[in-house]
Amino acid sequence: MTSISISEIEIALLLEAIYQKCGYDFRQYSEAHIKRRLSSRLAISGLKTVSEMQFQVLHNEQFAYTLLHDLSITVTEMFRDPEFYKSLRQNVIPILKTYPFIKIWHAGCSSGEEAYSMAILLREEGLYERSMIYATDFNQKILDKAKAGVFQNDLIKDYTNNYQMSGGLESFSDYYTSNYNMFIMDQSLKKNIVWANHNMVTDSVFAEVHVIFCRNVLIYFKKNLQENIHLLFYESLINGGVLCLGSKEGLYFTDLKYKYDELDKKQKIFKKKY
Image (cartoon, rainbow, N blue to C red; front, side):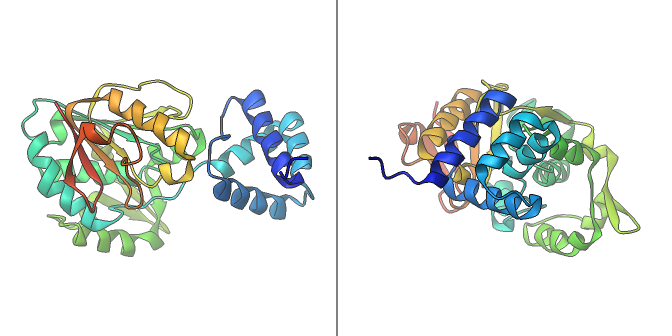
């Protein structure tokens, strides 16, 4: 007799139903993340069991869409972890200045705050006009929000502090206009950003790039999936390209650990060896 609980069986069947019905694969996401998001949706929806959610996924397209949004990772902010962006200016920008054209991939960009942060940084370093930022996510709803570049005004104070602490060279207010309770990113920042639907869990190499950002996303995945995505990133980077991970992420558990040099161990910035 197996020791797996009924709840675990229900969750496994629900994730399989989502994959078979919708084509999105959450089967290798961390159990803690999945349980947290499902519990929240159960409380909101009034459904009593995960099995009832499975029925809704199979027979209610709107519910399936809502659950896909629940399970996606949408946590981000402008100039998140300022010390990381300070290191980016010091350790990565000098490398990028040696290239005639720069391609950057923000994988799992969510609502786009970090893509806009990079656009601002590149402009201040005189690199924006020869750069292309590919910002991707599988969640089309959150991707549409990123493309609009409209955020709540109550975030401005934190974002301004982050920008200043990251070594920003101008005033953060130069990069947005405020309208009622929202602020709108400067349209010129969008010029070299390509927003695209891409699922790093199931899709192949997106493009050959000089820098990959994937910060605080891999922590939601199980080890095997993390290893698969690290291989995807390795194959997407040019030799000498830069991989930027989140503060609690790394690649030391993968076979690729000897194929990168550390540019900043604390900020989890790595350079692919030639």
